[in-house]
Image (cartoon, rainbow, N blue to C red; front, side, top):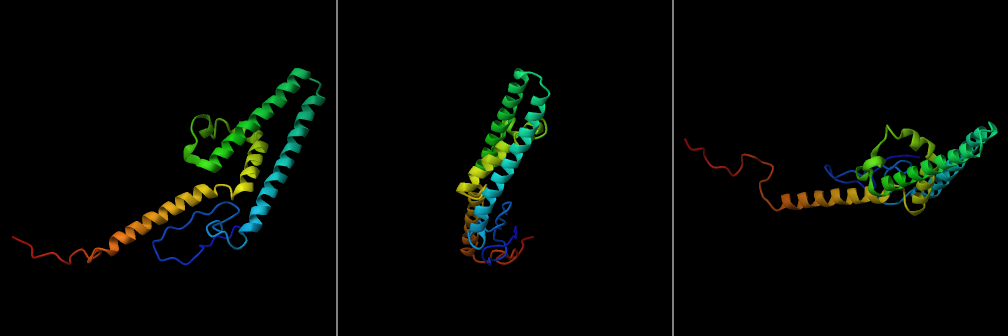
Amino acid sequence: MTQERTPTTQPAGTPEPEPIRWFGTSWVDRGGDYRLRRVLVPLGALLAAAAGAFVLRLAVDGIRVADNGGFLNGLLVAAVAICSLLAALRTWKLLTEGRDALTGWMAEDKSLGVVWVIGGVGSLLAYFLRALREAPGEALHRARYEKALAQHERRQAGRSGRPGTGTGAQGRGRRRR
């Protein structure tokens, strides 16, 4: 289902679109199975979030069975909620602005890895919400792709107006001694 294809046949040197996970390059022309994927990806993210919430519920219930007290149970639930919120915020920013926009604590992958794992449900819910609007990351990829195409067209237009480009020795006179 992640078949990568270019939307149209383009001349050599033309920028290629970056594939998006689960969508390949079908986001460029929004054809083919793009609409089916736009339905299935949010549903998959929602089902994965529900499964993750179920697993977290089992973990919290396991701690609750140990009868450690109300304070510890409340602290655990608050920690899971905060981790989910932080992961959701990071995922939303990642999908809307790109990895380069992540700064500070959001850019930490290794030291906050446990937070991102515990907050996986929040991350999946952010992915689900973003997938309702567009293929997650599509606006970012589309902006980069259109910018690359515009730069390519400007370079091609600039070359077509100059005769003799690409042939280094033509047009040079005799060398003086």
